[in-house]
Amino acid sequence: MFSDLVGSTALSASMDPEDLREVISSYQKCVADTVQRFGGFVAKYMGDGVLIYFGYPEAHEDDAERAVRAGLELTAAVGSLKTHAPLQSRVGIATGLVVVGDLVGSGASQEQAIVGETPNLAARLQAIAEPNEVVIAEDTRKLIGHLFELEDFGATNLKGIPGPVRCSGRTAPGFCGKPFSMLFTQAVHGACRTRRGS
Image (cartoon, rainbow, N blue to C red; front, top):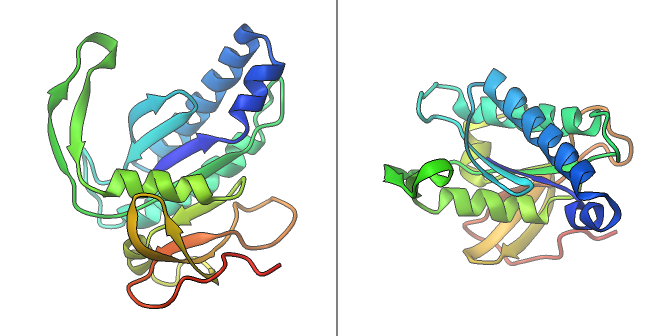
């Protein structure tokens, strides 16, 4: 899973650095607290982005469902944070095989190396989500079955990801506007279509 704070560049231009640090810290704590309740593991903070693993270091049979539920809950929780400015987030979720290796780096920057397409796919899916949306890959969608009501929006291409990606989805509960958001599912077949017709 990859979570990102929406509009952080605009926030940095309009806020005092100390206030911005407080906002980002509140966001990161909210993400960490939320995903940990669902068994997620915060692997890395990257500015206003957070990389989270489900299924590592401890695997659960329902890790895909846990990740989607955590993503929906964290977008709602971030939106309700009391900070200097209203906040929104985006989440991308992908499921796949990865290899977790030895620790790399040193000191505070030390982390476990991970090899595989899955974290990159999650980050790319997050990047195309609208505010307060959770975007999932096809393998994740298959694992969650019909637990979530999703709407199909067609297909698009993601930078650095081969082949078109089908779109469908839903937003976090409690947000006004359209009842569904985009969830992206990797398409094996089919032509690339415009993501949204209206």
